[in-house]
Length: 461
Image (cartoon, rainbow, N blue to C red; front, top):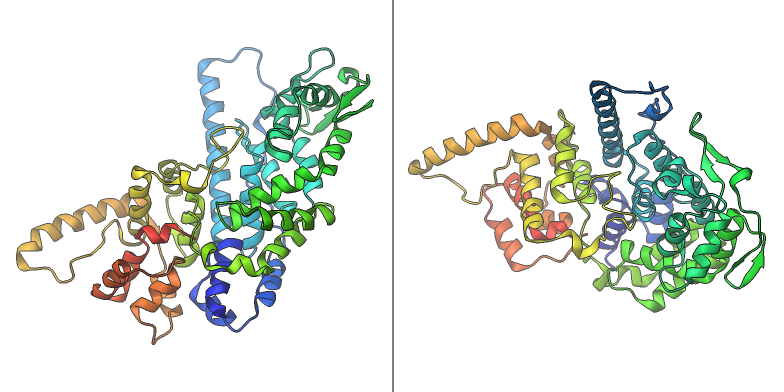
């Protein structure tokens, strides 16, 4: 068994990739030990508390001038940027890789897009705290978060006027999946969640008994005076929830093409452990099939995974954090701004002809001011071309203001490593002839590394 290849694969999926020095330290570890260490490093929780004020809780004048409205909107935008920034930084620097990788999974599973960054921060911390904990606890806390109550209109869900939005998405997107409940179940579930809201003065969850429908409801074939917690209990008691979550996790961690036999094994583990997430992940990472060739280097990195992997690998610091936000926009994944309640579709959907071009350009933009040297030594008549390239590079440097720590990166590469060995380490898929030839003809190691991260293969993990 090629241990270093398997450990590299584990870190690509359970985290955002592994650095040279770490792989060198870990290559004699068993998979069991590597998995244990990943969980150990992710025991610590690092909540993001960059925002301290909830703008919605300010006393607003009854009538606001356009100027006042504009100022508040600018503050909201500032908060949103600060939150995005803080998480991107944490993804790139934390040792708790597995916790952040799973926080990213739950962030997309419980997709939420509202204009209040403070509530988004709160929801993100709920997802982080429970990322490796219990799914039912996570589900309940997400459902009672002001962000989700606002996003899915449960604030408006009242006796006599039920709002079915939350009840529908709870079953369709968060737990059972389409086709495993009826329209009648949605109606009765919505009645059960009447009165779930948050206090507009304190921004905390509040149950309002006066607007709760306390009549009998028939849900999933049983009748009782159900409230929201009862509905969640019934949904989680249905094994279909374990299958639905396991399928989604399989596609996130293993392969975009579901394997029902493996997913059913996962669902058994998940269901029997009362929805504990850690035993489920341990089962996946310790399964032989997780390390099958067909499951290695076959997933498309999400834009955030791509940027995070680069930031971690090259120790990049950004003088102008707006650039990272710009990259996210260009690549089609802005944290805290999913396209809709279903989240980003992911997988092959990340790639189209224009996004692939941007994806292959971004690493060289960050690492070498946008210039990839495919030519080796320049002829004298190329001097004018090189001068224009240098001018262009200065413009990019001014705009991007990203500093990779090349010295640190280069120090970690084993002295005797060949360019091809470096490429094998940095790419998850097996090397093909095109990449090997490109790497071998590069004039020096740095150029060859910039070429490696600018290949289509680098888009895969």
